[in-house]
Image 1 (tube, one colour):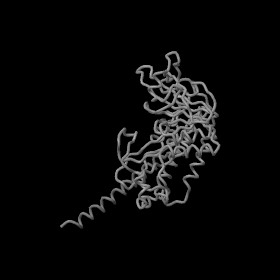
Image 2: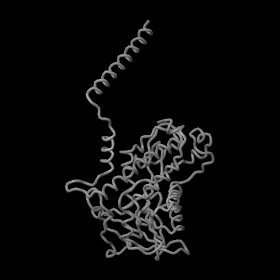
Image 3: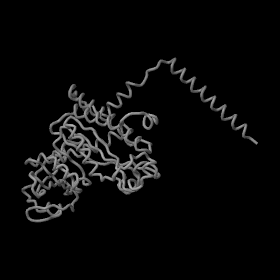
Image 4: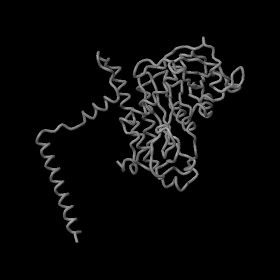
Length: 366
């Protein structure tokens, strides 16, 4: 495995491009959404590439961690990651010797998480990935870099923002929470953000028009989600090159959760977070292989649901179940004689090991 991750000759970025083409081909959806988000892996020490003490959503606090940004292709039939980028902090990019020791390419410049996300979105759109929308969390919504890049490409977005995010409306400049309070009661609608594990995820939704960049054409608004039980609000900054109903913005906002499902499945089924590698190349290779494995599960599950309607009393075939079936099918089936020979080999091996230990101990005895 170490040879495959470190010394073998293969291009992880070329495999990434193949994964993207594979996912888009099999999950193709004209209404697909590209979803960006970051996840982190807790680490010990300071030698692992790009590690530093930083806030991690995985732990909910500042920890010694490695952070990466991912891009997920979210379609009606399924969703899977199609790109990844390791976030390299300034403490690394400003220390060439440290970068060199971890195999980081010479001259790698610092890039923020929204900048990494914008590059991945551009790669996807340039590769003809069919997606009209981009969704993401507050890290990307509050930073103008990704929003500006998408507006220039005339690609719609629904990006979460914080309650204090500044917006400009007809009546002036407001924080998101202040503008939300001005939405008339009659303007709120009860809509589903998509199906969850326990049924449709209904919230109350409202929107307020906001100004976009001067000289640009399109529809800009602040979308507000209100929890029906607690009244808690969430805010989204939205852009569409052409007018769309609020229900479409709600659909896109709901797709953001598919990247959380992708992280959970990739870590639980394909070992996304189980790498024990320290160098740049090894990290990219491990993550690419984990993403490939998850893409296989996602596409297989989508194909099975399409080709074989679900029988009564069964849930649709899931990636988790496919992983179990695959592991069971590739496990060798042995007869009794083989099992006895295997037992004999283990006992003989253990006897030799015990003999060596005893001999070493006897030689060291005073």
